[in-house]
Amino acid sequence: MTNRHQQLARILFALGMVSLGILALVYSYLGMAWYSVPDWVPWGGGVTVVSGLVLLGGGVGLVFERTARLSAAVLLTYLSIWLLMRVPGLVADPGTAVLWENAAEIASLVTGAWILWARVAGLPEPSNWRLVTGARGTRAARILFALALVAFGVAHFAYVPQTAALVPAWLPFRTGWAYLTGAAHVAAGLGVLFSIYPWLAATLEATMLGLFTVVVWIPAILATPASMPIWTEITVSLGVTAGAWVVAASLAAPDRSI
Image 1 (cartoon, rainbow, N blue to C red):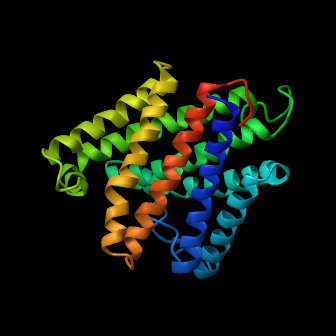
Image 2: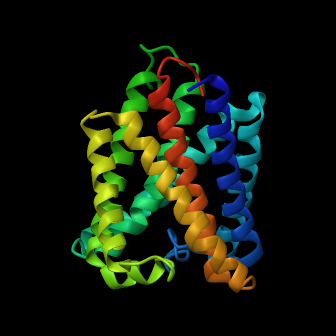
């Protein structure tokens, strides 16, 4: 993959962040991955607005070389906080697959920001940040991404009827597609995790996620253009897809900066 394609992956991730920011500002809602600001967080409405501004500003900042490093750091910090906020729910109810799926959505966004920051941070390997930046940081981010994909796959198997209902009606064997895409998520995750054709695994995953956006959510939003839940789904789908493309780009040319 050429450097131009890597830049396109970064721009796509930036667009994903911008779209999530706009969603938060327009609907005062942070997306399906967040659901809502937890009740124990004070000034929930203000948090949503600030979050929207962080996502919007961080996404715009990623586009420009001068601000890419700072923007990646801000987005990584912000998204990591939201991921950590999912941990209590997972500990309290580890058997509920949808909780893992929600955390996996945020984790895929964390992965994109992490890889971008790891590659543009410009810190020397012996620095105190060596475990989270450079080659080591990039590898750690890929592991997180791989685990997120496995969680996506498990959720497909746990909620087959709900997943099958999202398959376009013009496709035959809708339940079969639910199982097939679930298996594809798991296979891609294992491929990245164990370095079994990892670039191919990440690229096919990113392509599949992109197809979900085009085949499932774009027709849905055209049918109900005023639906906030559908806008939420398409926005989160775009962000997750962008994170997957960042991972694929990092695997294609590991020695080049994104």
